[in-house]
Length: 191
Image (cartoon, rainbow, N blue to C red; front, side):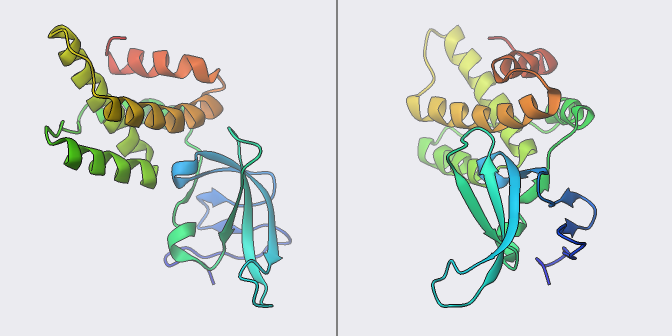
């Protein structure tokens, strides 16, 4: 069995989820707020220290090779955060569509911080791009008035950029340092 709505089946050493996520050893996936990860292995482990072996996806973050993540195959919530890496065409479409559904700036700092935190934890690219675009627009408006973006919003922006830039860099085959300029050019927003 696998997560609700997803069926995992063993094909030699390969697990698949409804054709959308290839979870074989050596494949790359996106895991929620952790970004692009390499599927290093799928193995039975006793991480609960109770003498019971469970199946785990062993993931290694692409931007932090010292970080190993263990995702229990039977955990619906955690496996639901696994998805395939976007393609170049999907990235471009996502950026264009983000203009049609902008995230509105919340003037309440605490509510805005909570909203941004939820978006960052989910790691859904559409939401992250909307959040980045929202913060870019607010930053431009503040600059026009001679003001700066609050530090908490700047930190949220940087974290969202790291997640988006990691996947976009991987998918587009460009250095991570060039992704911000790529996003701004497609969205038509300034520095």
